Length: 430
Image (cartoon, rainbow, N blue to C red; front, side):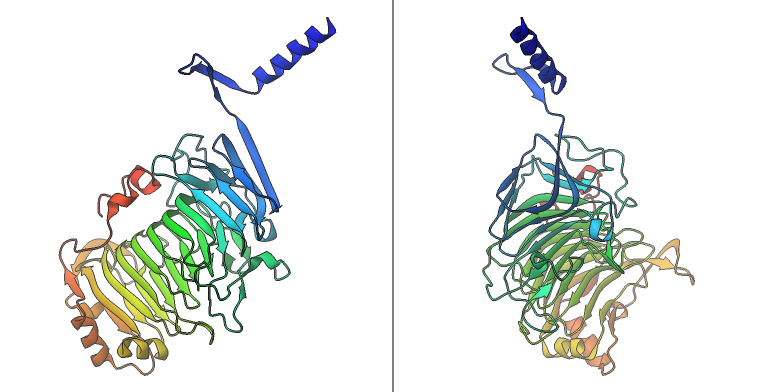
């Protein structure tokens, strides 16, 4: 009798922890999991995060060197609220490996615990992509590829205390492999982790060409969408929308290629592109490539691009539209201007829709549009030693032009079916 009672009790316990809905093809019950998996601190042995439950980042989670974190297609990871040392972020340390290979049918979603998205869904219904920001941190991937910090050959990533060695990035292995990160959407992040320092949606520090990063979406981040601190990794098919600062940010001699990308500005977004050059003597020759991009501005504010600190690389075949009359392409300093005139920084085949939102004297759009009278009206060399006539002539003669209809840009089909942008009908202009 005692054994029978114990068996009945165990059966009732199992039934109470799962839900049965219908039957499978073999007349077996289909179980809908209702499990949350909580993660905190260091991951020191290989782990797999499956798609059978919601994964909760309780605080800073760091995958240590020599360890592999595998995230299954369709997995949902939610970060808890918190700032500073308590901010919830996922850090893939230098020497660790991430294997997050989502698919168009089953993307991997990083979001906030405030998001009511459920297992099997690609989009929740309660948060606003434009306004709901800073609810958790973001994703940081670090590697051993060359970087150019102010001193030395390595750097500590923003927001991770100096005594946490897992926050260090950079090295001499251009082909370093941090793993796979594909079909991933990162939403509602960017919480404050230090004075004036918010987490980017996706931070890549010293990530090498052995890594595979493509089909990435960053939505509603307080700070930048995607920021590359040095490294050589190539990024394909990336979309950033409604960020608070810059959509695509390049620093410390990044020398990879970002190909086929989309930007959709929100009312508080700053630059579509913010591009800095090397900070020190290490990796001082690193040159980036940005190509095949479509960038949609906002009527209220925001710039096309800002090139600073001796930026060097190639920007090619981009289409800009929807910006306001205050937007410009800036060369911010003497070294950047010199690099542009010398061909170390090239801006070619850039097409700008000639129609722009008109701003009142207070900087607020009055609901009307105007047409830029000349291409050089949106090109600004702001260096102290600028040669305006020469720079303007170069900009006008490098295949850059004002246009009246879509001309080039990204292939938006790569973002259909798996992004929040597509679910909200935001790709029709691309």
